[in-house]
Image (cartoon, rainbow, N blue to C red; front, side):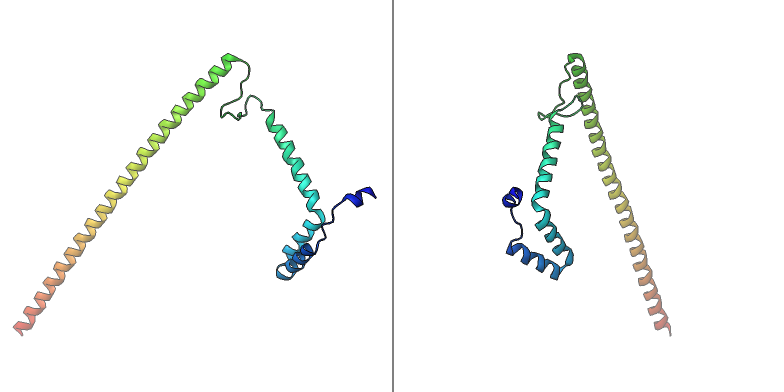
Length: 149
C-alpha cells in the first residue's frame, strides 16, 4: 500500500488526450503513448541504470583502452610504454605518407580526366569542322549544278 501511495500516476489528462489523438492519426503513435504512460518512469530508471553500468565498465580502463587524456593508459611497464609510443609514432608517420600519396594520386586522376576531356573536345571540334566544311562543299556543288542547268 505504501508503494501505491508514493507512486506517481502517469494517467494525466494531457497524456490521455495525446494517446487518443495518436490512435486517431496513426495507431502506432497512440500505442507508443500508452506504453509511455504505463512504463515511462520505469523505462527512464532502467536507462539510467544501464548508463551508470556502462560508465562504471569504461572507467576501469585497461591497458588497451584509451584514457580521457587522448593517449593510451599506462601499463606500469616503462619499456613497453616507450615501445608502444614509438610504434604509434611510426604508424602515424606511415598514415601521413599514405595520405600524401593519396592526395598525389587524386591530383593525377584530375589531370588525367582533364587531358581525356580535352582530347574528346578536340575530336568533337575536328568532326564538327569537317562536317561544316563538307556541308559547305555540298552546298557549293548544288549551286553549281543549278547554275549549269
